[in-house]
Amino acid sequence: MTKINYNSKTFASVQNSETGEVSAETVFHYHQKDNVVWAEYAGGEIVFGNLIGKIADNETLEIRYQHLNKKGELMTGQCFSTPETLSDGRIRLREKWRWTSGDFSEGESIVEEMSG
Image 1: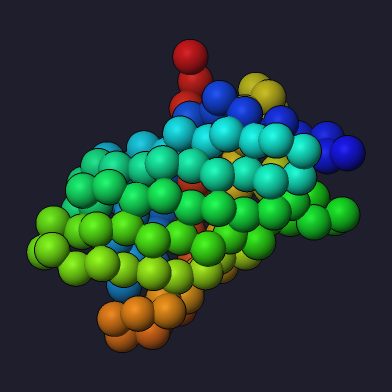
Image 2 (image 1 turned 120 degrees about the vertical axis):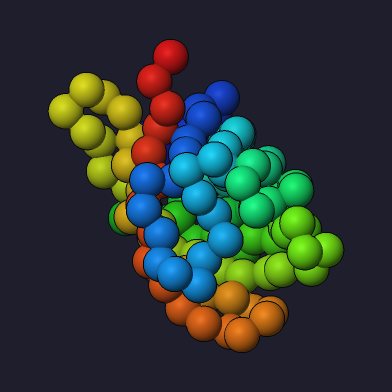
Protein backbone atom coordinates (compact mmCIF):
# COMPACT_ATOMS: atom_id res chain seq x y z
CA MET A 1 0.00 0.00 0.00
CA THR A 2 1.22 3.50 -0.77
CA LYS A 3 2.19 6.03 1.87
CA ILE A 4 0.88 9.09 0.02
CA ASN A 5 -2.85 9.47 -0.47
CA TYR A 6 -3.80 11.64 -3.47
CA ASN A 7 -7.57 11.23 -3.06
CA SER A 8 -9.44 14.58 -2.96
CA LYS A 9 -6.17 16.57 -3.27
CA THR A 10 -5.97 19.64 -5.49
CA PHE A 11 -2.73 20.61 -7.25
CA ALA A 12 -1.51 23.59 -9.28
CA SER A 13 1.57 24.08 -11.42
CA VAL A 14 4.42 26.14 -9.98
CA GLN A 15 6.94 25.54 -12.78
CA ASN A 16 6.89 24.14 -16.33
CA SER A 17 9.09 23.88 -19.40
CA GLU A 18 8.44 26.25 -22.30
CA THR A 19 6.72 23.66 -24.51
CA GLY A 20 4.29 22.65 -21.76
CA GLU A 21 0.70 23.92 -21.71
CA VAL A 22 0.03 23.62 -17.97
CA SER A 23 0.35 26.93 -16.08
CA ALA A 24 -0.34 28.35 -12.62
CA GLU A 25 -3.99 28.76 -13.71
CA THR A 26 -4.32 25.00 -14.35
CA VAL A 27 -5.89 23.15 -11.42
CA PHE A 28 -5.78 19.36 -11.02
CA HIS A 29 -8.37 17.47 -8.94
CA TYR A 30 -6.89 14.10 -7.94
CA HIS A 31 -8.58 10.83 -6.95
CA GLN A 32 -7.09 7.53 -5.81
CA LYS A 33 -8.13 3.92 -5.27
CA ASP A 34 -5.36 1.56 -4.16
CA ASN A 35 -2.39 2.24 -6.48
CA VAL A 36 -4.49 3.89 -9.22
CA VAL A 37 -4.70 7.68 -9.47
CA TRP A 38 -6.71 9.83 -11.85
CA ALA A 39 -7.49 13.51 -12.15
CA GLU A 40 -9.44 16.10 -14.08
CA TYR A 41 -7.74 19.38 -14.89
CA ALA A 42 -8.55 22.70 -16.54
CA GLY A 43 -7.48 26.33 -16.56
CA GLY A 44 -5.11 28.59 -18.43
CA GLU A 45 -4.62 27.25 -21.96
CA ILE A 46 -6.42 24.00 -21.12
CA VAL A 47 -10.19 23.73 -21.66
CA PHE A 48 -10.43 20.27 -20.09
CA GLY A 49 -8.13 17.34 -19.49
CA ASN A 50 -7.82 14.13 -17.59
CA LEU A 51 -5.07 11.77 -16.58
CA ILE A 52 -4.70 8.25 -15.30
CA GLY A 53 -1.70 6.80 -13.55
CA LYS A 54 -0.36 4.13 -11.30
CA ILE A 55 1.78 4.35 -8.21
CA ALA A 56 4.91 2.20 -8.36
CA ASP A 57 6.42 0.40 -5.37
CA ASN A 58 8.97 3.24 -5.01
CA GLU A 59 6.07 5.78 -4.75
CA THR A 60 6.71 7.33 -8.20
CA LEU A 61 3.76 7.89 -10.52
CA GLU A 62 3.54 6.77 -14.14
CA ILE A 63 0.87 8.86 -15.87
CA ARG A 64 -0.81 9.22 -19.25
CA TYR A 65 -2.64 12.49 -19.91
CA GLN A 66 -4.90 14.02 -22.53
CA HIS A 67 -6.52 17.40 -22.90
CA LEU A 68 -8.21 19.86 -25.22
CA ASN A 69 -6.44 23.21 -25.40
CA LYS A 70 -7.88 26.63 -26.27
CA LYS A 71 -6.54 26.28 -29.84
CA GLY A 72 -8.94 23.35 -30.27
CA GLU A 73 -6.14 20.76 -30.34
CA LEU A 74 -6.41 17.37 -28.65
CA MET A 75 -3.07 16.77 -26.92
CA THR A 76 -1.69 13.60 -25.33
CA GLY A 77 1.40 12.73 -23.35
CA GLN A 78 3.09 10.70 -20.68
CA CYS A 79 4.65 11.73 -17.42
CA PHE A 80 6.77 10.26 -14.62
CA SER A 81 6.34 12.04 -11.29
CA THR A 82 8.41 11.82 -8.13
CA PRO A 83 6.56 12.92 -4.98
CA GLU A 84 8.03 14.69 -1.98
CA THR A 85 6.39 15.97 1.16
CA LEU A 86 6.94 19.65 1.90
CA SER A 87 7.68 20.94 5.41
CA ASP A 88 4.02 22.01 5.80
CA GLY A 89 2.78 18.52 4.85
CA ARG A 90 1.68 19.37 1.30
CA ILE A 91 2.73 17.16 -1.62
CA ARG A 92 5.06 18.34 -4.40
CA LEU A 93 5.38 16.35 -7.63
CA ARG A 94 8.54 16.72 -9.71
CA GLU A 95 7.56 15.65 -13.21
CA LYS A 96 9.37 14.59 -16.36
CA TRP A 97 6.96 14.56 -19.29
CA ARG A 98 6.82 14.18 -23.05
CA TRP A 99 4.16 14.84 -25.61
CA THR A 100 2.90 11.85 -27.60
CA SER A 101 1.24 14.30 -30.02
CA GLY A 102 2.07 17.72 -31.43
CA ASP A 103 5.82 18.37 -31.49
CA PHE A 104 6.69 15.33 -29.30
CA SER A 105 8.90 17.56 -27.12
CA GLU A 106 9.94 16.73 -23.56
CA GLY A 107 10.00 18.85 -20.46
CA GLU A 108 9.92 19.07 -16.70
CA SER A 109 7.36 20.58 -14.39
CA ILE A 110 6.54 20.90 -10.71
CA VAL A 111 3.02 20.83 -9.29
CA GLU A 112 2.20 21.39 -5.65
CA GLU A 113 -0.80 20.59 -3.52
CA MET A 114 -2.92 23.67 -2.91
CA SER A 115 -3.54 24.56 0.73
CA GLY A 116 -7.01 24.60 2.13
